[in-house]
Image 1: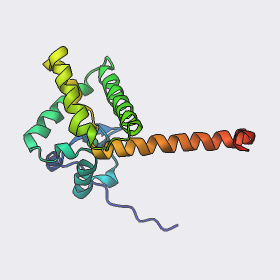
Image 2 (image 1 turned 135 degrees about the horizontal axis):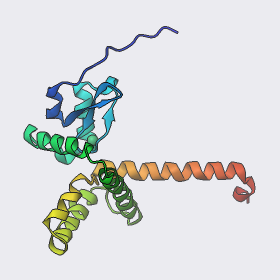
Image 3 (image 1 turned 90 degrees about the vertical axis):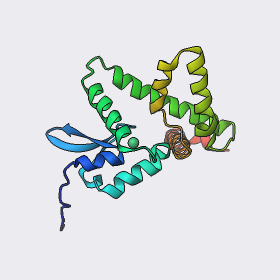
Image 4 (image 1 turned 180 degrees about the vertical axis):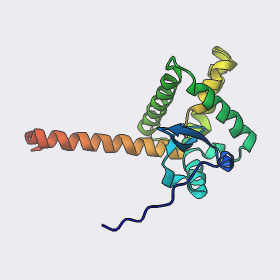
Amino acid sequence: MATKRAPKRAYSDDYLKFGFTSIVIEGIEKTQCVICLKVLSAESMKPFQLKRHFEKEHPTYNDRDVSFFQRQSQSVKKSRLDTTGQTAITIRATVEASYVVSLRISKSKKPHTIGEELVLPCTKDIVRIMIGADAVKKLSSLSISDNTVQRRIQEMSEDIKTKLWSKSNTHPSLFCN
Ligand SMILES: [Zn+2]
């Protein structure tokens, strides 16, 4: 099989304006999103792909300037030094919360935009008033944008479909009338 290897891309400081910082994994420098912490493959390090990631995943951060991403990058790098595992727990909780909220939005048959337009601002108001301004910061990494909600619902429905299929293969009688 003829394979043509794409040239390896290195991280450039320029990528920070797209919202990406650098991370070294097994000796290779890669790009990492400063919002969702996703690490991109070397092939995905092209500026248009970085831009597309933000437009798709974090539309509410599109108009942020480079100084915002610099601050985010510093806190991401600081959190890597966290050996207590608290950062990993927070990330897991953020993802779980995003799924739980998406499920509620889906069940209520409300538009997917309600997450970013109403749910998140209301949650921030409640948390700020009842718990404190510091706790609101924790919500900054929560993504319940229009696209995220749509994707989460799709993923959950695919998951249910897959589970049903595997069940129907194991117990075909379950699905026979
Ligand atoms: Zn991201």
